[in-house]
Image (cartoon, rainbow, N blue to C red; front, side):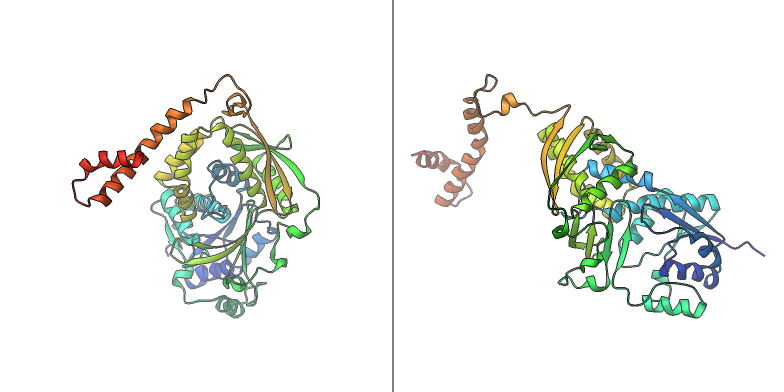
Length: 422
């Protein structure tokens, strides 16, 4: 008899993956090894091992990915000021690459031929998991049950659990779905599918209602080294502890709530509600420090690449050749972005009230509105005239074309210039 093939399942113990574990083993005939990634989702992991084994798994790997998630994925995104479609700080998007990497590593260690995940055929996560897996192990196979099995709804899965005596706590009336990690918590689906419906206040987990936030503002100082946050209020912290600290500060003041309709990679618009309190603080502080340090044209070049960088994260191309190049560019550009930003937190708002940097290009001798000895204001006259030259020539050309709309208008430009000046 041939040995049964192994599949590594990304397992949470919830409704979807509980059904998938049973379906992969008993309906498809595979040995299933479960893998649970701890990226700070705050869910209780106690008892997950016993549940997986009782449900038919031959083993469970619980991997603590919190440190690598923040250090290797969240902080590089902060360095690049990556925000998707103006609002979304990519909390879920950034968590998928380390999970995909872990799935592949467990598959290699276990000798599994395939990985499996609970993402649906409509969403972004299927793309992120699978592009990551294929980039890291091109010969890996993927089993995506939501794209192949006959079940089409949560009600179908609940009925499957009833028939097969699978213990679950889910009900068909769940009002929305959530996904949580150290950077954020997201809410979508259910009652949120109506973009006109306001999110229920009791939904939020990480932030207080700004109306109920403290009535006095609070100042916080965040220190950066080469664009990476390293300290809060002068206390040096590791990546996980630092993000937890700024999450608590931002959440206390109702900061980081976002309600958007975004464009999924598959072409569907989706309404998402997010809480990203700490990431919001880190982003504001980072922008403040680099405003002192980065050269204007260097910053402009970087800002032109940020939308593409951000889409690559959102669409699942973290392990692509182009991302490797962009990460190197962003990392190199951030050398010297070292300093402190002071933020004031109040009723859902973040205001930068101070910034200082060791390598600052800001020079008060040049910037002052008072008398100075380093800047000749008369130099601005020639600077402006040279930059205005192309604007003048464009106007001469347009007026000449109006006067004589023929292909050859060059001879009219000189006369039009004289008339324009007069």
